[in-house]
Image (cartoon, rainbow, N blue to C red; front, top):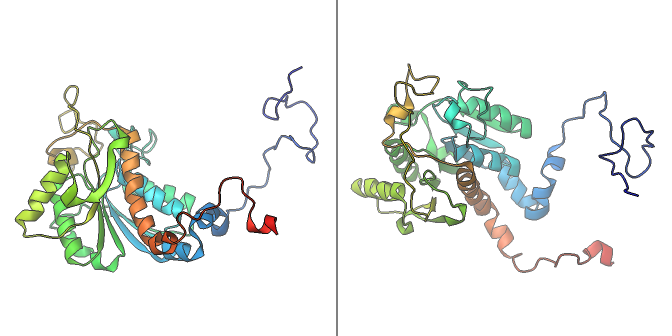
Length: 308
């Protein structure tokens, strides 16, 4: 006789809620919003309370919330970051749905930063999420006090704006982490974090190095990039053309400002974003967790309380 699981048992059978295997029916009373202690218990279990405090007070600004940046934002907020500013001028386009976290068939045309802010607040209602619908360029850069943030994260895919942000952020003394090219890639295992000067096989990283060198920049900063050689597009894109799918193409079509539009996949862009978020989390946790490495108890070993 095959034993039915609690998930396959007929809904017409009587159920004793006190017995193991009871079916949990939807309550007429909505559940209360989880406390921060509950939501971030697994994070605190790994990192400890001092690191959680650092996560809660760190000020982070993220430029670009597309295929990489949207996942960066989610990883930061789910890990306990409370003070996050999102900057992006674009609206959700149908071509974003394949890889951008906040893009769905139901919110095309909505500003990306607004849609993402709404999602992040559903995850962490107590977070201070600021959405700025703006492009970072010569006309807007003075409105951002980059030195007032603990971390400046670059997930911009337009070379000119990207280089300007990096110049200004580094000059302001901010801690900068930058994402290089995630498009035209297929293999997420080739993703690396490295100083810009040591990156290889990434055309965008090469272009950024050259542009910064032309300005006299001699420093370095950590970035996320891939050592996979870029793949060629299969066919031509309609993005930026007369039949572009962008909802705002009659106002300011950002596709026209890009030198090249590559195909891209979420199983690559999302790990790029997670790696970018990881740089922040590891930096905040680094000195407090370094001493613990190599001293974790083996799986299945008794905890100190159970051993007493």
